[in-house]
Image 1 (cartoon, rainbow, N blue to C red):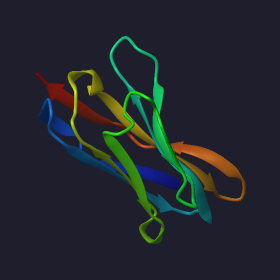
Image 2 (tube, helix red, strand yellow; image 1 turned 90 degrees about the vertical axis):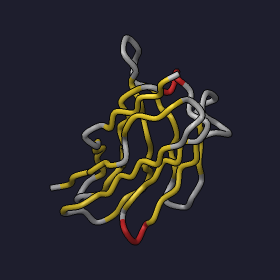
Image 3 (cartoon, rainbow, N blue to C red; image 1 turned 135 degrees about the vertical axis):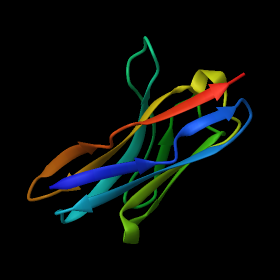
Length: 118
């Protein structure tokens, strides 16, 4: 009943920027936390950043100062602005949200490939 649809992935050169978007649709009553995870080849999925419904944010040390998370509650959308991209940022990025649909549950986007070339 709930879908998270991502957009904005692609190929960029090191030092460039990308913005990812993730919009929730379907039947639900509310969204609390929204965030972004990533998984690089041969590595575990890791938390990149998250934002609460009140706008509080946390960032992984590896991206703090370069990435910015934001959300538009009216559009049920979360964004990830990625600046000063590094080759090490290459990964599949997944959005994630805690959604109330009778009960609280975790939902995931389909994944967006971000490739940073040297």
